[in-house]
Length: 69
Image (cartoon, rainbow, N blue to C red; front, side):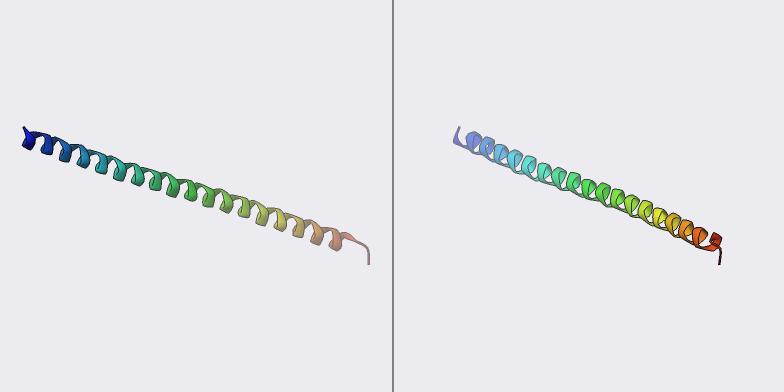
């Protein structure tokens, strides 16, 4: 009887340990995915800013080229 109770306790301890470990990995994976999404969004914003800056530069050049001398 004691042997079966000990085995049952060991199985419960193993199940708890494995469940905690797998949850931790899941949280880490979700965090990594969220970080990658933020990095991608920041890169997209940076690209948009660069494009807008180039458009402004082109407009300024066009405005200065068209002015009478």
